[in-house]
Image (tube, rainbow, N blue to C red; front, side, top):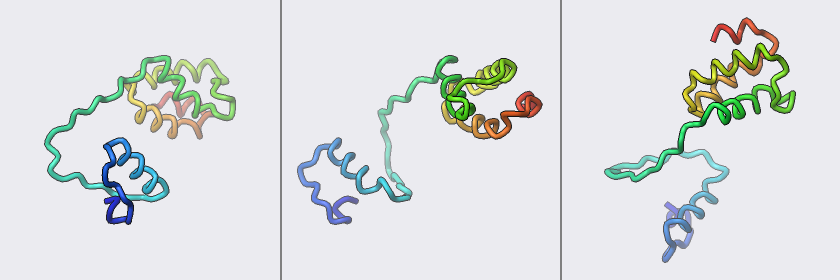
Length: 112
């Protein structure tokens, strides 16, 4: 792919290829199709613990208050909701996006 873009990559190791590809694609939107991949030795990151989950959630949900929950009732409900996310960062961010605009509505938070 890099050679098609006019980049010289002869003698590059995999990390150099990755860095070069990252630089080329940094400001572009693209779809990469990987065909005929049979073996993937991938280490998945660990799930977040309760403290890190709450930190991730509150950092963005309460960004106007520097990540600090302004109301203990919201904190209790928020932590109950975050437990349901099972430590998955994407689930936490999705819930955060749903609840952050409703920071004034305790009823909206309890419906989740």
